[in-house]
Image 1 (spheres, rainbow, N blue to C red):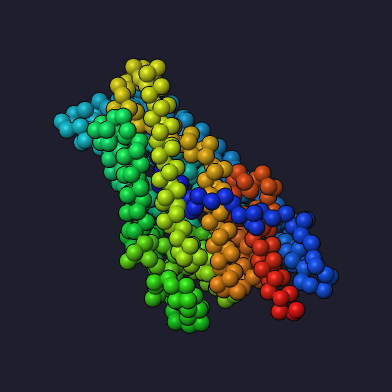
Image 2: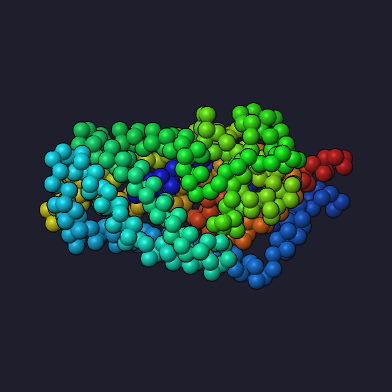
Length: 426
């Protein structure tokens, strides 16, 4: 069920992926040999990655393809444990001691989410602790990782239980069209989550402090003012305690909008690289990607809920007596609901990734025009290759990439540079 939150933040627009980000550099031709060669410049950047670095990066990212499959397999295993082994029936008996149906449902949901966390815990330890350490991408001790994982689980259980309980109220009250009204509840929930996350959730895991005055802060705020982003401060957060990855964001909506960048970005990147990253993040705000992704997710969730409604009716009609499920609105159907929603997300991965890449490509172009730092963007794309395969096949990019590939981003930057240098030269 946690995917119902995560997938919302991956949807950025309803447009198709920009051809520019997927461009095949072999088809690029120069007007004359004296002009800046975007292909050669791109290859020079790619060649900076040693064979050992490329092999490590490729292995890490390709391993991530399997995690998508294994997480879905775990969802199936979890549903089987609850439905076929009778764990769901046992929880219902425990919850049945409460008199009011909403309290019974809440007890079931809380126990379900807690047990799901326990079932998936060994896999999460391997995937998000040992695997990250094996590639040098995590800076946390096991106790630190465990503490954060428990905190994340607690937050998810609190918010997740309220959302799920609300969905089952709608299922009970509006049986025929619950999937329409349920989608509306998820939409409102996401708006609330985006609003509170920068102020109340993110600070639980990292310390946010105003970025000290200086050139970098001044340039970021100048970019914000020039593009009508309503912020007056820039925050930094200590992500280095968790990871070696570089990142930044413009988060929140309304009064909670804030610009944040992590200390890895400050410590590992040049001013030109930082400026290019921040211009990209400001692009998401200026291009209204938050609102576009909310609209996209609303459409996506309606389709998903409609499919789940159809499949749940079929499954309950055939196996409901064996599983102890009387109807869709029976809280015992939650394991079935969860696995069907996971199935929907699993088969929709190429679609959601393409939608996400579209927004990232748009933000890349915006960032180039706003910051005017093509080499900054190209060099950052190379630094991201620590954990992203730099040059995937077209098939890989379409299926698995939520961002444009590193090579595609470098080529985009070099084409931008070529146009500006060659125009000036003429």
